[in-house]
Image (cartoon, rainbow, N blue to C red; front, side, top):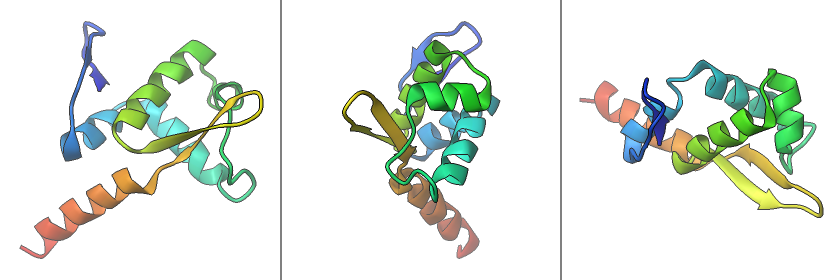
Amino acid sequence: MFQHADHDEVAVTGIAGVFAALANADRVAIVRHLRAAQQTHPEGLSITALADAVGLTRFATSRHLKILGAASLVAVTAAERALLHRLDPSGFLGIEDWIFDIVEA
């Protein structure tokens, strides 16, 4: 899913969905922060921790995480008191495969 100028969510799948999800600066900031936190928080981060780190509201962060999850870029696991979010390699592997196909063509 991604946001159009009119703020409607549109389902986009495959590599187009990955690129659409990464076409937003706030979502890229979330991905970068999750990447940086992998060593210290391998289990993932809560929405509150992510929102505080990237300077967004919890509501906005939640919406962005939903879009990143739909693109297989972020995975969610349930912890005792919160949902924890971490990078999901499958979406990034799709980008790698797509680029490799182009480079090798």
